[in-house]
Image (cartoon, rainbow, N blue to C red; front, side, top):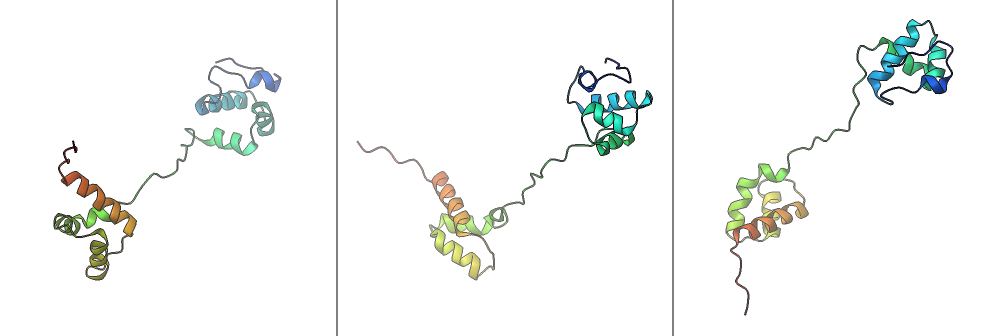
Length: 133
């Protein structure tokens, strides 16, 4: 990695072998800080805030990127499958299954979710119909 003199202009100081990589940025911050540059000069040279420079100099490793949580709760249908499948096999309508779940079992599930599940289960249970000739 190139080493820049303390009085190098910012345009030269911001170029490196791996631009934008956090570890390279931290290494550059450390090299320039060891050369005696102040936080303000480091921030100006690298085009970042003083807070970023301070965080990079005190961090052992770059902070992990916070990614949005992709955690999804288990669908309600998974917990009531043992109730629904026998009703589907008896050809109970989706609306009647929904009413039974709400009234008799106290389970809250949207009708559209249940209807989609029933529709998928019924199409997978049925044998394909022969084409009409």
